[in-house]
Length: 110
Image (cartoon, rainbow, N blue to C red; front, side, top):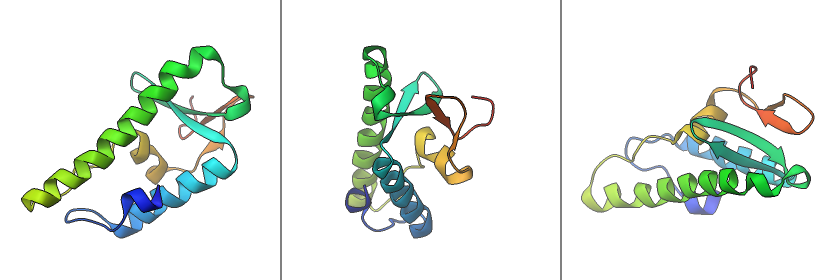
């Protein structure tokens, strides 16, 4: 993730990008993946994933890829970068914590 993010573009904070990259690396080292179901973002350990989680995993991955691609376009036009997507905004606000046996969340109520 750190390599894909690179350096901050106009309108971005290098500190926030570094935080996103370090959180992504920390989660990956622990085997925790991000999933998205509608507006709900949650995390699961790779060993706890089921076939039913595939769509949520793909949705989270698509949002990440779309955001990384969107960061490149404004630079070509000399504009500010787009805001962080919902899935990363949550990581910037609060630390990830275990909320049940198989789920991790950035929100205490999930």
